[in-house]
Length: 234
Image (cartoon, rainbow, N blue to C red):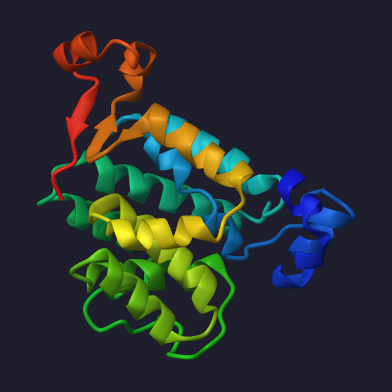
């Protein structure tokens, strides 16, 4: 909210209700919009696999300050858990775990044919429409770039859809350096500083930092010996 208010000229980039929440009335407005799922992915990085209850609670907090409808909260919780699974589970089983979770959370989800999903070009801003679609597009991609392209070319609410797909794909695939650098070039320093601080605590190069040992970050030798870094073999 603080950042949003620093850039009032960008208000038109937000949905009407969320813009009102930022600039006028920051109280929950019972939304089940896909913005709750779009912004939650960092929570998936900060808890090692298996501590799902903590992730559920933190994802709920991140959503309910604005998107307080149960579907908005559920969408945020699912994406946070999915990101965590894609980060910490072995590569060969992580997509299957996400598929199983999506099939449980969204009963009509069809990962093979994409039935019961928003149609191409359909503008669906809901979590219950956009989240299963994001999973479908991720599961049918072989790289980060392909996943983003699939989301953009699918149409509809493609910017938010691509952000959610990117959350999943970025947790599983390597992100090309040129794409990272290009994206960073559009951001003000105050935002890249926060990104660098987050990466320094939870991510380093091609490694994930086990948050259990994050206090040992300054001691590289001890960190390596005690399991601070978990190789991200993607």
